[in-house]
Length: 210
Image (cartoon, rainbow, N blue to C red; front, side):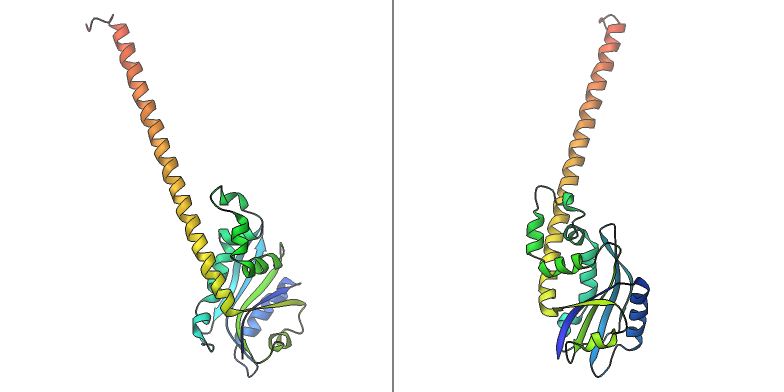
């Protein structure tokens, strides 16, 4: 038995919707089990989920089955995925290197970049008896199929989640610093305004306090 994350990129968008409907109705067969599936589309560099299902069937090692596709789509749709799609590198800032993100998520990078702008894809968590099981089911569609070992995908997702957490902490730190700087600037302006008002008041009163 082979347990893989399978990326199926469609030439025709409507066929992707037809395929996920058919897989939902035939998720368990003697040749394969599709435990999770997500239909995604890339637009303006961002990958978003259009449809999905999870039949709750455990594969041989349910550690890799539990939520893996959901986690993968979460990464693809978040800042890491957009960086790997080449559309959001500026958000990394000086504290992060996009090259490091790519190095720590090579499979995620491949998945992200294999889905071209405007293209639709199915991401599947599947257990197969052979490497052509899913191809046989999807043979009537114009597709490109790529497999990735589920355990390796899970390991890379774990690293991507860590990096994403670091990015969030760095962003929060910068926002707090910016807020602090803004408050200090407002306090200084308020202090200067008050001093100017008192100086004006003293000037009007002739400086004698009357």
